Image (cartoon, rainbow, N blue to C red; front, side, top):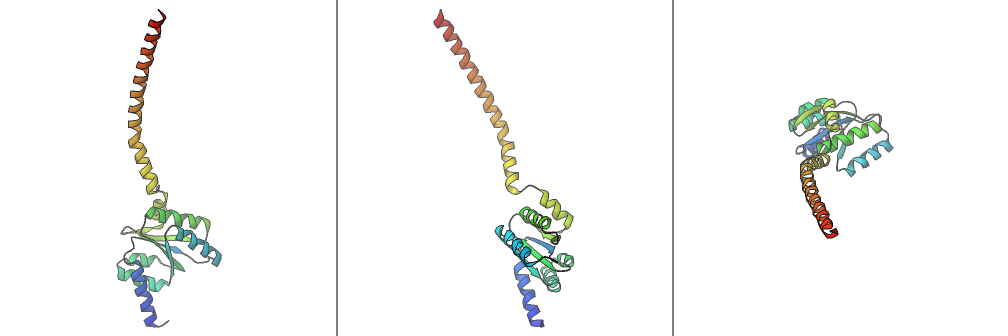
Length: 173
């Protein structure tokens, strides 16, 4: 590969990853074409972009971007998964893929400006998604209000039953 071509590839990698908030590096060695196609389609459904990279060129690009630690994680045949959306979704999706395809192994990543190891990515993947957390917060806020409403309804309905009983007693006399 000529130096000019290598320079073009490095420039393309810099352009692709310079503004990305979430990048995860995974080992791609030993994955067959069918598994690769299934993996790519699963990830593209969640708006996760995947690119197989040449290790030395990716390391140069990450060094120029200012995240050389990520470049040092790259070994063997590597793939870079990137997303600007929820990093938990990215981590969960890749962890699920690594369970389904034994050869696909997460190495580490760059999430919201922090270099993360495999253990950090696994921890991130165990966190509930943003939607689940928002739903839990909503129910936590709503629960006391529901209880107060039930108390008022119970008091009003008890008063109505007492008044109805008094009316029935007087009408019998």
